[in-house]
Image 1 (cartoon, rainbow, N blue to C red):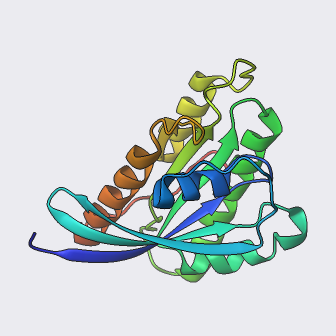
Image 2 (cartoon, rainbow, N blue to C red):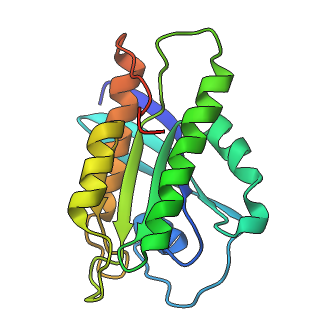
Amino acid sequence: MSQSYHFKIVLLGPTYVGKSAISFRFTKNTFITAYDPTIEQTLSKTIEVDNKQIYLDIYDTAGSEQFRTLHELYIKEGDGFILVYAVNDSDSFNSVKDIYKDIVNITTSMNEGVTPLTLPPIIIAGNKCDLDDKVVATEEVQEFCNVCGCDFQEISAKHNKNISLVFETLARRLVEQQGSVQKKVGCSIL
């Protein structure tokens, strides 16, 4: 392996969407069944992507509204983001759209006067795709991601479906962004 990288990945989303289940599944290959509200938890894992060693610090954040003020700090400190909603909860996808807007607004204010704006890589992850009561249409999320330039993946922490893929894709985007002189512009649907 020629190069190594170190990135801070932040999982953001409302409560009950499975952020902790995702981070535990990825770092420990364990599915947690009991719900224990998270304030903040940091896990780490080293992966290999495209012959590059990538060390990830994964911040599992609080989804509760009472800790929403911490989101600004996570957004300022994070290198890349996984925005998590539950496919069986349309309100959770609406929350993810709001979090995306927060990332754009905070990134814009941090880079005032700098154009074009470089957004950190973002993946929208629809967790619980193993459930039969899906209410958030894949096409709706894909359309949002196409407009905003985010990657999208439906996942299941319970069945370990596409969990590693999400983190590997985000790591790949971070490496690409770090090596690229091209800049991205934020979503225009704000």
